[in-house]
Length: 441
Image: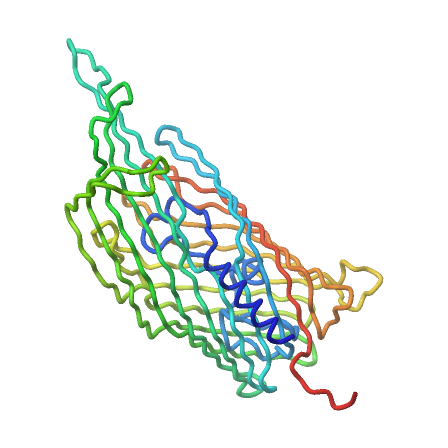
C-alpha cells in the first residue's frame, strides 16, 4: 500500500511538471507569471500565512515552516486551480480572454515527534504561455495623400513552467516559541520568441525569411526559508496573539540563458520546424540572482477554535534578468495582505454549516514590473470554505477545500494592458493518524 501511494505521488508530480498554464501577457518578462501561493487555505485568506498557526491538527504551513505547533496528523493535500483572465487595452481597442485549469499543489506532511514536524510539497512557481501578434500599418504619400502600402507584424510567443519542490521541518522550542526551515528547489525551462515579418498591402510577404529573436532559459535554483513564530494564548479567555517572520536566502542559482537572433523559414505548416537558418547574433549568459532576498512579517489575533484575523507585509528585492539579449531590471516588490477565518460552532451537529470554516481576505501588491514609467500593480479579494467530511472531527479536520480570488492587475494608461481575473480553487485535505503502531489489536 505504501509503495502504491509513493508511486502515485511521484506520478502526480510528473503531471504537474508537464502541464501548460495560460497567464498574463506580462508573463513575457523575466521568469514569467509568478504564482504567489497556490494553497487554497492561504489564498482564500488574502495570502496571510506568516503569523497563521492553524488551531486544528491537520493543517501544515509551508509558507512559514515554524507555524506547525498544533500539527499532529499525517496530511495529504491535492489541489487544482481554474484561472480566468480578461484582458483589455486601449491600443487598437483590443480585448482577449484566457482560461486554464491545472494541478496547483500536492503536499504530504507528518509529525516526527510531538515537537518535530515535517512536510513535502510540489507546486508550479511561475509560468509562460502567451502568443501576441502586434500589427502595424505603413503608409506612403501619393499626390499628397497617405496611402496604405503594407504592414508588418511583431509576434511575441512564450511557453514553459518553473516548478518548486519544497521540504520543510518545524521545531517547537517551548509553549510559545517555534522555528522552522524550508529547503526550496526551483527547476524548469522557459522559452520566449519574437518574430518580425513584413507584408505588402495585399497581404503578400515582402521577404521570404523571418527575423526571429529567441531566448531559452534553463533554470535550477536552490535556497532556504527560515521562519520563526511566537504565540501567546490566554487560557481564561481563549484569546491568542501570534507574531511570525520569515526570510529567504542562500541562493545557489544556475540559470543559463541562450539568446539567438537569426533569419529562417518554416519547413512545415504548423511553423515549428526551422529551415535555412542564418545566425546574426548568438550569446549565452548565466545568472546567479534569479530569486533574491525575500522577507515577510505578520501579526495575528483570534479566539481558539472560533475566529482569527491577521495582517502581513511581504518584501522581495528586485533582480536583473536577461531578456532577448538585454538586461531587464525588476523593481522591489511589496505586498500587503489581510484576512482570516471564522468557525461558527463545530460542536453543533444539528447544523452542518455551523461546522464549516469560512475564510476571507484581501491584498495589494506593488509588482516588480515597471513599463513606460508605470508600475504594474495587483490587488484582489478572496474567500473560501473548508467543508468537513461527515466523519471529520475537531481533531481530524479533513474535508473539501473551495477558494475564490477576484482582482485586477495592470492599467489602461500608456497603452498598457488591464487584466481582470477570477481564480477558482478546489482541493482535498485527507488527515488521519498514519504510520503509527497500535498498542492493541
